[in-house]
Figure 1 (cartoon, rainbow, N blue to C red):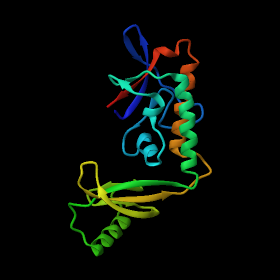
Figure 2 (figure 1 turned 180 degrees about the vertical axis):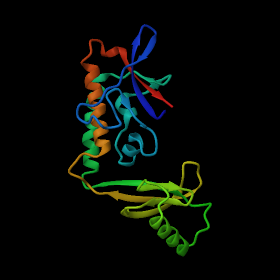
Figure 3 (figure 1 turned 90 degrees about the vertical axis):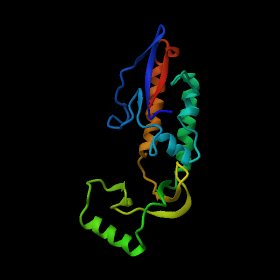
Figure 4 (figure 1 turned 135 degrees about the horizontal axis):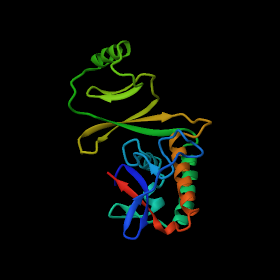
Length: 204
């Protein structure tokens, strides 16, 4: 499936993109009513939900045909509320996330790794506080890594999966907000005169 998801309306045999709008709850969020951003990238909502053992957007909206999903919108509303509740239960004590680092191609020993990190901390090469580059993954503000698991990356090459814990917060996290905006989108469709005319387009 593609990375972004847009809301479309079918007029005759033609689909037209519905103008997206800011969420009423979270107007500055990257998800918008009618637009779900980077849903299938490594840090996208589908990947994160899968990590937590929670159903993703495919389950909420059903299968696609020629990149379009034609959900039963009332069923989708029930499902997104179920997913939101499951996500909150799964992350109530903090969220475990995974960063995969390829285990081949480098020749830096332990001492060299320390010197490299010291150098980066003293002379940052980017304004981002967390980033990855050819040398590996860097968290300038630190990160609570709870395990390093040997495995494979997406291409089957040797890799180490760094499992890190993101502590709980009194505020909903970005993925919780994303699901709430998905819920807002469904509610908006159901408020229209002909909800069956609306479909979701998965774009690459």
